[in-house]
Image (cartoon, rainbow, N blue to C red):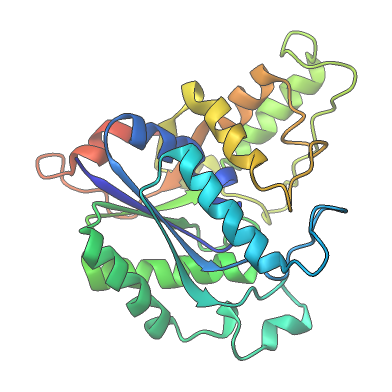
Amino acid sequence: MGTIVSFHAHPDDESIGTAGTLAKATAAGHRVVLVFATRGERGEPQPGVLADGEQLAVRRSQECYESAAVLGAARVEFLGYVDSGMMGEPTNDAPFCFWQAPVEHAAKRLALILDEEEADVLTIYDDNGGYGHPDHIQVHRVGKRAGELAAVPVVAQGTTNRDWLIRGMKGMRENLGRAGGGADWEPPEIPDDGSFGKPESEITHRVEAVEYAETKRASMKVHRSQMGPDHFMLTMPEPVFAMGLGTEFYIVDEPPNPASAPDIWSELFEPLR
């Protein structure tokens, strides 16, 4: 049995980014651990979801544990930082937010968990945090350093394959009926300005998790404070959801030697080329 630790900025990031990988790991008998830098205090709750006086951070923490149960995660931890808000907002300057956290100090907090778990694989984000969110960028910085401190064999940077997604959405718009969509669902436009995801040429590995697409959707659904039933990802027809979100992509700067690679790495991750 191997152990994969998945490090995220906010509650619900695990559902969108790595839920397929984590569900596949659990099904294969491996141990899954979720670590969150913040409790998502700056999120915008769905109307009517919170009870009178209910704090968003408490609700989102609860949703993390519900998501962990869906994915089969064995442990959930929070590093204790505060959500920094979107890039450029005044909340980025708060001394207690994750964006302002000293990388070395935060990395030592994460490395303690990695050491306890004897992690074989650590998932983080790419150097732009997927889409430029300060907390996501900080996950990349802190996660890379923590992986070094704990000598984790594999640090996999979760990302979006921008070229693949643009091709897929273009094809769906042209052949919506054949793709399983309908007149009530329109594929979104994917920005091609470099602000979202990474070009395919920079991506090294993928995890094929189409068979766990519905588990991934179920993980998203428990984050009710952030994703209403009309959220565009939750309204995707099943074939479209499986095609668009059933494969998860990663950048691995230093893949392990095949002769000494952890079993969990060899079983889950496939070279993109």
